[in-house]
Length: 368
Image (cartoon, rainbow, N blue to C red; front, side, top):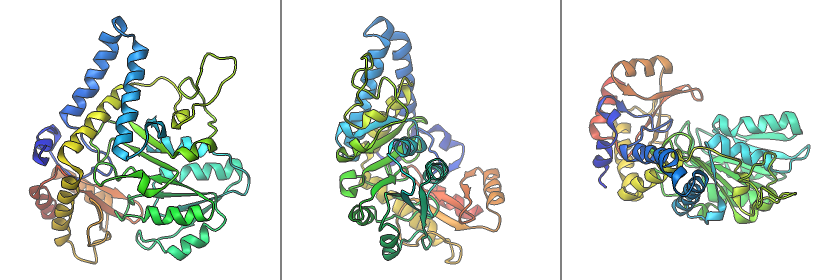
């Protein structure tokens, strides 16, 4: 598929210059159709055919396989969730915490990667350390020092506030050498850069489909490395978590599936499969190449004192200083240009995806 063919499948792009994919992307019609078809199958076909629950389980199984293929994982290492925050919380509440255990996170984590540790600090007495960065850049020596006696490192693959790429594989090695597990918030990666969780080596990787994958809301996914599974003892349990839900006692499923709980709509997951198919039909190299070219075009029009993201390409997230970020976003919305404000740093953030065009960038620069 050509990137412009994908653009033609997204009707809202005829109405606005949309540059906010890092928050959420409008979905193409093929994705919406897949989700709608799944609802119709579940409600109108399956009850008189294989049955509603067999149809549900089939979609779940197909989605785990598709996500595993997309991330370079084994199917047993994938659990289906509702969102990134949901996935992080499922891991956080399933690990065996003791008072005094240490979690290290960076200062560039989204609230999804902040709040669970604050809650565990209050309920379990864990210590939370913050690895300070320099505009999204990590000091390796400081990271090594903070991780020396830590139990978990939580970091993003691409920072949501600067668009920088953290050296996930290198930091994972430092953490593992110190005896700490690693959880990666990867929601800004799948769909805009190639992701191979094996290359990262992390224990847990969390993501969702409604950003760069151009998928529907409600389709999250969670990777659990096979060797990390036994460390997870979920607090919440349901029939999807165990090997035999009808037994007198229960045993957790062997793989990541132990973090799944109960009945939920299959429609978002059918849409997620279609979204991954669309990205694959373009090719991730084409996606990243186009994003790089368009972000370079954008940055050419931004002075160094305003550009807070790296001038050299790292991702489609471009953060720009603004005196009043919220007023800037509102003013651009009046001109039918959609971006967002962020709190730290106080700035506006532009998200450039493969379906954007030179005209989109020029329209933004004209009103910015």
